Length: 627
Ligand SMILES: *[C@@H]1O[C@H](CO)[C@@H](O)[C@H](O)[C@H]1NC(C)=O
Ligand SMILES: *[C@@H]1O[C@H](CO)[C@@H](O)[C@H](O)[C@H]1NC(C)=O
Ligand SMILES: *[C@@H]1O[C@H](CO)[C@@H](O)[C@H](O)[C@H]1NC(C)=O
Ligand SMILES: *[C@@H]1O[C@H](CO)[C@@H](O)[C@H](O)[C@H]1NC(C)=O
Ligand SMILES: *[C@@H]1O[C@H](CO)[C@@H](O)[C@H](O)[C@H]1NC(C)=O
Ligand SMILES: *[C@@H]1O[C@H](CO)[C@@H](O)[C@H](O)[C@H]1NC(C)=O
Ligand SMILES: *[C@@H]1O[C@H](CO)[C@@H](O)[C@H](O)[C@H]1NC(C)=O
Ligand SMILES: *[C@@H]1O[C@H](CO)[C@@H](O)[C@H](O)[C@H]1NC(C)=O
Ligand SMILES: *[C@@H]1O[C@H](CO)[C@@H](O)[C@H](O)[C@H]1NC(C)=O
Picture 1: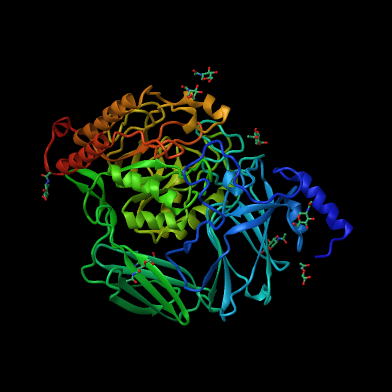
Picture 2: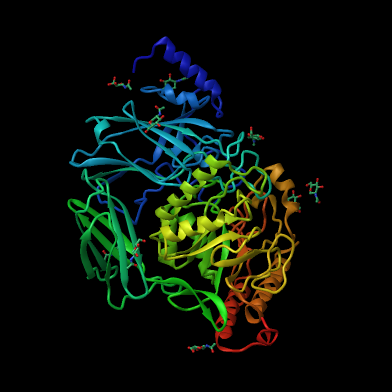
């Protein structure tokens, strides 16, 4: 590397601009306000698993690990990339720059450079695809000095065919990231992130927060695989390819245990085709059977998987119900934020991520509501495998009605909603899409949720749509979804301020309730004074774990009454874990304390399912009330 005076000056300027202090730094986990048992074991080769199990290729190379990072001053910096220079700080990829695991623990990291280098294995003789799981929020990707791609949207994967930019030795990969979060008048999908965290709004995540990898694929290769398999054994698939032409493609369904092919079919790429598997074992939370899938498109060979199940709605004994494989089961889950004290949006590792899901399964939950965040593909794979239905929220724009999107911002929100559905629509565990949470970013004029519901249904006719979970319900979508704390009002003939009366033409649902808090000692709290000061904004504080369990029992019993007496079809308990200034989780934020009395909760949750089953068969007193 040749350093001239200009480059030296540039380096010095950047070092000053850096949030992580001036000068060089090598990687070390920073001290987070709270640790988990995985904080110091996550290591510097994070997320070694193949990151995209629904479109998996055998020849791949993980680029996760220690990269270099430096903050940049503004958007214009992207026009002057620091090619061939050593950025000042080491950083862990994937991670959020604001997290302790990143090694940076920055604040206000709006503009950033990331760099690494890679070699392509000599045995690869096809094109090279560079894949990013997610970068928050905008990324410009430079390979060996070439602007290879620009991508916008903090929650979505993207792939760049970088073959034409590669050299035989080391290749330089440089990424410019711009993440405004809620600065200035930006109105973009951010979920719970804010530059000024307080109570229910949390530390933001900037940068490359999901896995990065390269893989070998033929020039004309599979770019997206849509797979839907239903309770009648019909597999409906579209295999999209990079050259968008109609060519022969073969899809085979494989028994995941025996490895035997149970059906295979030849169709054409880039158009839907379907075929039938006779008497497949169905997917459900109690029996989450998955089948392996192989796709052969010329030289491109893909491993994938699917589960056979049908999501629909129907009237059972006079009440509109969500149906899984034609049957009504009560949907009971938690509000699941997917936040970590050490990694923020990025769990410290797969084991930690799966621990949350297993905790829910153990208590008897059959669902979670993924709250205004999108997870890694491996998270949905785990829900598919372990048997947990997922209600997937679209990440919200700015909260409340303070700053609503203008036309261009609304268009971009809609574009990203489409990307969300297209990216996630092949996971069997996802049963419902949510468009708006509690009116956040929901334009009041013209009720946009009606057209957006139609759009989502057109992109994915195989699932239900919860158009507005909480607050501004004008009758769109499949659910009449109430939020109420602490006690539920689920499909009931009574309601409170900011909720709408139950609409019996749609599914009666409790999109949020519970939320009761229980303070813990400092060692389990997010040790940030502003967060601690906000704890008393919790709807209800129960002073002991016993009283918290007593209150939980009471609230779950109320929900059970509403199943028996009224039209309640499912509920979402707030929430899986504490987050920053919120202390209302089943688990504390560090996952070290499980507040639930396991025996009591299991019995209370089972009682919900039993009440729903019994309700389908018997005539109860509420019917005589004319409900
Ligand atoms: C940082 O370290 C690299 C190599 O380790 C060196 O080339 C560079 O000059 C250093 N930069 C500063 C600002 O110290
Ligand atoms: C990089 O290329 C994209 C088009 O792919 C373009 O929109 C963007 O402005 C370019 N960025 C820079 C810094 O040249
Ligand atoms: C981070 O930056 C924001 C915006 O500049 C500021 O309001 C906030 O106080 C900072 N937080 C910390 C922990 O430094
Ligand atoms: C980086 O350095 C290499 C080796 O000296 C050189 O071939 C390449 O052109 C440089 N890249 C840029 C973008 O200047
Ligand atoms: C298969 O999926 C496509 C795309 O969603 C849809 O248009 C088509 O009707 C589906 N076919 C069957 C048989 O379900
Ligand atoms: C099915 O796929 C899973 C996940 O890739 C793999 O672990 C398993 O070995 C596969 N089963 C067979 C029989 O190939
Ligand atoms: C909450 O606690 C803070 C200090 O921890 C105190 O200043 C504030 O008055 C309390 N608010 C309420 C509503 O009790
Ligand atoms: C919660 O506990 C922390 C740590 O003991 C304490 O500082 C804080 O005041 C408590 N807050 C409330 C509302 O009880
Ligand atoms: C409800 O009816 C179904 C079918 O009619 C039956 O299989 C089931 O055992 C009944 N459940 C209860 C709780 O009575």
